[in-house]
Image (cartoon, rainbow, N blue to C red; front, top):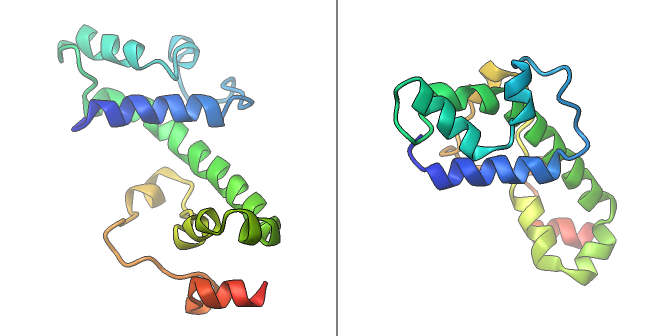
Length: 139
């Protein structure tokens, strides 16, 4: 992993967002399931395999492969909640509504589709290219 802090933060965010997510059906060993959100556990797994005390890509694939689709699904649910309350957010925190509007959650959920995501491409706008201010005018 290029940035260990990013990986540790991702695990922590997933621990919070996926608090009600059962790990019983995940494609992992029981021990991996038990410590799924533990950065230190994945460091130890890297160390056991002779890679040192940092999580390497090979080891990070295990939790990322199962957590990233669940993470995107959780973000999608929160995004839908924001848009369900768009009138509230328009008047309460327009900046937050703009942030959610300008950053659509990818629809990819399987491993191969997620790998193909390209975050360097220009963001496809919502509502057939409607800018945020035009969107707000329709609310």
